[in-house]
Every structure is written in C-alpha cells, then in structure tokens.
Amino acid sequence: MKVLGIETSCDECSVAVVEDGVSILSNIVATQIELHTPYQGVVPEIASRLHTEWISQVVQSALNEADMVVADIDAVAVTNRPGLLGSLLVGVNFAKGFAATLDVPFIGIDHIRAHLYASQIEHPLDYPYLGVLVSGGHTVICKVNGYDDIDVLGTTIDDAIGEAFDKVAKHHGFGYPGGVVIDRLAKNGDSKAFLFPGPALQKGNHPYDVSYSGLKTAVINQLDQFWDGTSAKSPENIAASFQRTAIVILMKRVRKALDDTGLTRLAVGGGVAANSLLRSEMKALTGIEVAFPSMELCTDNGAMIAGLAYRYLVDGITSDLSVTASARVTAFKKTYP
Ligand code: KG4
Ligand code: ZN
Image (cartoon, rainbow, N blue to C red; front, side, top):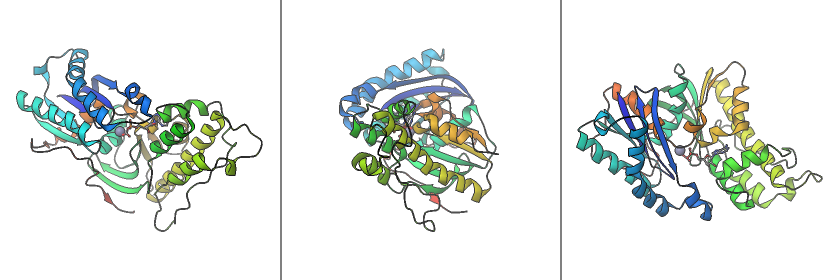
C-alpha cells in the first residue's frame, strides 16, 4: 500500500510516499527557513502563503522521486493537528481534494503521535516503550502502549525544549534556527563556563514534568549571575552551558520515568532529537534499547505522517472528509504509573 503523506503544520512543506509503512520511496522537505530568517522565527502568515504556493509542486516532486503517477496512490494522509491553523489548512484541504478526486481513503494524523512514531519506520520496537517527544512546540514524556495508545506521564509546564533553544539563540544573535546553531557552537565550548540552574519543580506534583522558562531567562537575562568568573563569555561557552543544562533537565525526568515504569525500550522524536548531546546521552542509558529517527525524520517530514497513517489504515481506520484542521493538542490523557 502506497501512502502519500503531507505535512504542512509549521514551516516545512513536506510530502512523502511510504510503501507498507516501512519503505520510504520519497520524502521531499521544502523548507521555508530562509524566508523566515529575517524575522528570526516562523511568521504564520508567510508560512501559510508559501505552503499554498508550493504544495502542488512538492506533491509532484514526491511522486516523481517515487517514480509514480497520481493513480498509483492508495491513500492520502495529512497532519491535521496541532500546529499553525492557516498552514495546517493548506495541507488538509489539498489532501481532502486529492483523496476525493482519486476516490482513495483519507486520514488526518496527529503531529505529536507522528513524531513519536517516526523512529519506528526504521527501528521498530516492541510495545510498550517510553516515548520522548522533543520539538519546537512540544516536550512530552509518555508510555507508548501502541501506535494510538499513549499515556502521557509528563510535559513541559511552560516552554518547549526547542523553543528554549530558539529563543536563547535569537536573543544572543547566534543565528536561526536556534537548535542547529547552538548544537554546532556548543561543540567548541566549555559547558561548565556558566552553571545555569535546573527547575525547582515540586516532585510530588510534577514527577515527570520539565520546565524551560527559568533556564531561558537565566541564559538571556542573568548570564553574570551564573558565570564561573574566569571563562570567556563567548557564544560557544554560552551555547555549551545552556545545552548541557537543557539536556540534563530532560534526562533526569527520562531516567526517573524509565526507573518507575520499568520500561526497557525508549523512542525519541522531534526536531531536538537531532541534537548531538541528547543523542549521546540517550544512547548511554544502560540496559535500554533506544530508537532514534534518522536526522531527516527528526524534524517535520511527510514520511512520519505516511508511516503512522499506514498503521491506522491496516486497522481499517480512516477519516471522514468532514475532518478539519485544529491548532490545539487533542486526545492525550494524563496518567501516572
Ligand atoms: O519537530 P520540529 O521540526 O518542529 C516542531 O514540531 O516543533 O522541531 C523544530 C525544533 C526547533 O526548535 C529547532 O531549533 C530544534 O527542533 N532543533 C534542534 C536541533 N535541530 C533542530 N534543537 C537542538 N539541536 C539540534 N541539532
Ligand atoms: Zn514537529
């Protein structure tokens, strides 16, 4: 079964063809990064306008690369939540029109679930496993019982981890997008030059939650307060110290969740899963089988949408054409083990 997967929830206009949920025949990512760079962040109106202009061509490119014609598509999947509403609507309406015209199944896919699923395309784990989603919009630690059966253990109580990377980089003028630049700068920095604080979350209420606004504020407004007094106040040292603290905050909660649940498998997803320190810390967890998406499948992409859609489709689950886009996170229940 060849599924066309469309992803337009933010600033990547991406379309993929995935066969039987595992074979990526094409995965075109037309990034808008350059066009948002002057603003050092995604401008929603610009994002949706570019998706409108690009989508037909990106679909055509995905079909060309997969050596397919339109009639070869067996189903159309699209991210329909959460994200920027105007951007989502471009993909959703395109996908619905396409599916209706071809008379093939249509399915709306949750972006968060797709990030959590992305690693499974190339590195399938047995259920259950601990899922860790780290992106620009979300930070979620959860128990994944099945592709559509997820118990949220913890989330961020304020900023998402990727948002903290982006805002720190923007404030200090490191470049855009922030996560990639900080990762690169940090390689030549001293991560002990600044000893930034972790969050003081009350353990009883937030056993698996994280918080990044305190760290962000410290790195942006209180550098001197956490400086070691001797190291250079260089971009490399700021980046390395911030990155180390950001990853330590996450790893503490991930370790606790693994200990408490007894899970021995872990899947990471989302743009920050491309971070080199995060990848090495996760891989160093003893006795835990860790699945990462390849770099192209960490950030937003159509392949994770088509890959997850295949699971629903084989179980006979499709969406009605009345399904529309939603900016908000839906249908996650929050439970504790
Ligand atoms: O998953 P994604 O493409 O979009 C959302 O769903 O949010 O994630 C984008 C986020 C941005 O915050 C970006 O700065 C971050 O992923 N990111 C990274 C790295 N590459 C991308 N953060 C840290 N290190 C990286 N290497
Ligand atoms: Zn994403």
